[in-house]
Image 1 (tube, rainbow, N blue to C red):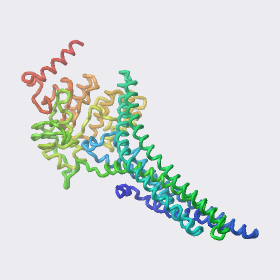
Image 2: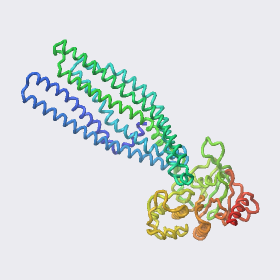
Image 3: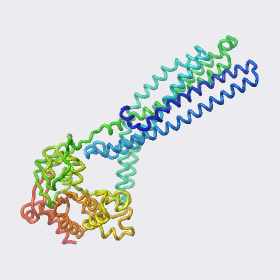
Length: 579
């Protein structure tokens, strides 16, 4: 895990390596100061003059200044290294996620990936910062302080060694009981983030159904669940401080008692007040070192599970990749499903698609109808290889999609999803997702085909109109037409509309289909729809039910032979007559 995480340090290795060096010099300066103080007190006790006081006083100032500069430098390099490391780690995680297939994303869930990119990376950043500074400073201070204490007080310094077994036994027990809690609490963080994400995205639905109180209760339950486990973990971690303080203060009391006895019994020959004073200073430094080690220990304990979760994403291999010597040219828009079956996971009880055998000629217009859950969207997602077929093969342009370079395939297959997304930026910037080199004339032409040009020109800023994140400042129908125009700019061999005209009126829908017939005769067009009007003029219409293609034909043929199509058509035309 550590090796995988530390790969993200990269260009920040120099400040990360410089931090322990600067910390070492800072600690040396701080540990020498009590020794100089001892010498100064002894000189004063011996009746020294002003020169000796100035000499030692100047040396103390130099040592304090040296430690201050080293500490400041360590703080600067530590901040640079830790923030840079966190930036690289987030970048590596984000790049890894960009390469994931839908199957990989389904495995982790969106909310879990967001938590790993935010909370988990922050935990790792804090742990890294403490590792390169606190975890170096504390042991060095502990060792140097003990060495100096031994140099000044001899065997008296060993008083602190008797407390170490107690301290480490306590810390080991804390680790044992807190790690399972942290492992569980981060999974609950994922659930909490999922609740927030779902609520914010569906805010209009929540308000329209007046379900705010229900959502509040659901959120409170998730937050309380996280709070309970975190409280349990924090209660156990809180034992660090009293265990550590008990050990250190026990050592200080023992040092004071034994030291006082030695001073009195030997008349100050074996140990004097100056050296006892320095020993007490070193004991305080040992106390602070142990306190810092305790904080480092707590942070690292919390971050171990975060590190495991991050590495899990970094090590995840996409289930869909381009093969070696991949085909980079799609000849035409012909599509062949050869006895294709598909399930979303190995644990799935049944196939989402079962034995689909379908052949589409280049340039054909194909309509797909079927009830909810009939796997219409699943079928078209196999064409652009968002998922791979479990059995059989899917071919585009006569080549198995698994043999294509992914970029080449997806550039040739444009998919307009029902819930397509617009990004924050201008209309032009959103359209150029289809072709970054597209001219203004090409943008206008694509929008004319998608019946979007008219409403765009009604905006004060036209094509330079700013779109809010998610396209919240345009209507559903406008958003769908902009997404269709964006897909057209790719000049695809295959254009798939997955219920992507559901929010436009029937007249506009008809105009879009007419434009496709007249201006995209060589492009294969697949229209997934809920209403018959959107597909009745297609060359062929597929009727799907429970993951299988139960009928294929044009409108007239299906009206004569297929009961499902007849029922859909009559229910919709009756509705239209009633209006």
